[in-house]
Image (cartoon, rainbow, N blue to C red; front, top):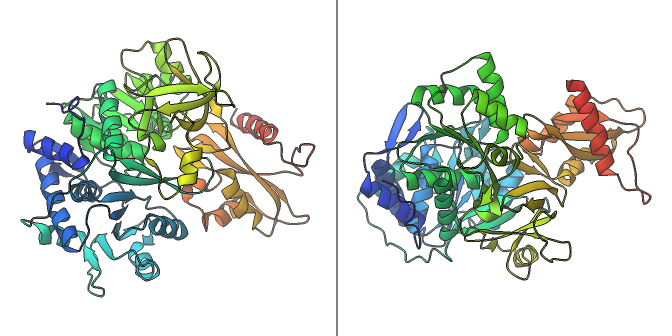
Length: 533
């Protein structure tokens, strides 16, 4: 039984509670050989909410989730929603300075964190952060460590046990104004900005997305490996609740494991960024699996070429849909539908979701006619409440009619389909993540062997766009590309580390001495293609 179509005025917590009441024994999550029913997740979220309330966490407080995709993330998200608290989902692979900034900026009162991830000891990091961040009062850890040394640190399972059977006050929420999540994105400036999303923002977009693709209670969904990302939380997680579908959770990005799980669990729908589908094509060619259960794939987060769509439909699943997704719009803006023609599914981003309006604007803000290239602007129920604690940035991101200015260049054709042409501002989209050249260039310039540095994106079948560091070395310096990558890895998140390093004698310059980035990118792209040929 689907909940789609009955979402007006719903909070995140009420969506799960309704599903758990209708289908308490329905499987919600598969994870590492375990299953979690809708009733079980709701019950554990109730217990965690009661325990958090016992610590003094209440409506409006921020709870940071520093977790990979795991059942504890799902339970924590719904527990926060039940309290009326706001979640702050953070990538567990952030550097410590990035993590500290976002915790401080969001004024998180509590963090729920993995104890260890990819060799990083988060208990040690939070030992310092609890001292440095006065707003951060409590840490709840997911792991096996015996905790005895701090009365502000608790284990996740101990919190569940402590909250079982206890009551807590139910908040009176207005889904249209009360915040559900603050998600950090680098936006168009390269600096982290907290996108503030209400319950209504996320609920409306998630329900409309799964309705557009026809997700139902017989589906099993895979491919959501980043629950800190808006698409994972919205159409992925919450969308599965609306449809009554089951999710196969993965805590890391791995094509071979994804294909194994599709075969084992007879998965029917796969979400993913184009990079995942590309790596799956190679893996499936090397080690074929039985993927006959798959009926549908949905690619979002980066541009998808016609060639990739064709190859995925030939080797992975019979139908691949493409979505245009932004954090500021609670994920999906437009999406191709199963009923669209093959041409529309291969060459467009589909039509906007119901209730969402897309305009194409000239540089002076005037609306352009159909088939014209301009900046895409969006209005609809999914558009963010604003950037958290940044009213000036928020104001600058909307036009006088209240449309969000995306910075993307595109076209809306005569049939209402959206086409993405490029971006007005410099940004590289690598595997679904925004990477701003200036941030990487600042790190490169600090290297003693680098005289000048410029970072450009080049088209890549795996990443969508690969990051290329173009370097003019200091005269007489000896430095390798691997040394440059290792230098960047010290302070930059993994997805910001250059994939390619090219050493040049000089850069093409404008008459005023600035780097001709377009010309440089063309040079690197041509070289990149010739090396692959």
